[in-house]
Amino acid sequence: MRKIRQGDDVVIIAGKDKGRRGRVIRVYPDQEKLLVENVNVVKRHRKGNPQQGEAGGIIEQEKPIHQSNVALYNPATEKGDRVGIRVLEDGSKARYFKSNNELVDG
Image 1 (cartoon, rainbow, N blue to C red):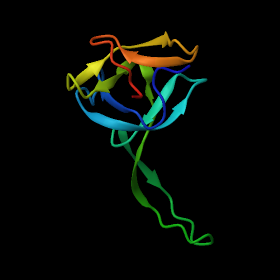
Image 2: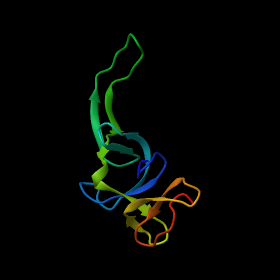
Image 3: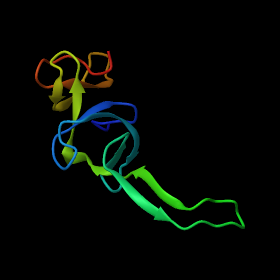
Image 4: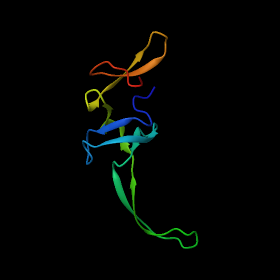
């Protein structure tokens, strides 16, 4: 079970975007990276291709960020928080915030 999943709200805790919040767009488990919206935005200079109808220019796009630089956003404390995994009474696993022991998913 992954501690951070697609669709989670996260806080950046290290790097040039430290302190910013965003939603996880995509998870790359083999690289241990996450794509977070409006975080780690870089500019790419793209050459146009008139045969395929692609315009050239400077394009801004998000790049993946390592999962160690991200913490899950806890709405109760309004901060980034560490996450643990707990086995519930029915045998299923659930994520919980370590600061206040509340379940992440409900």
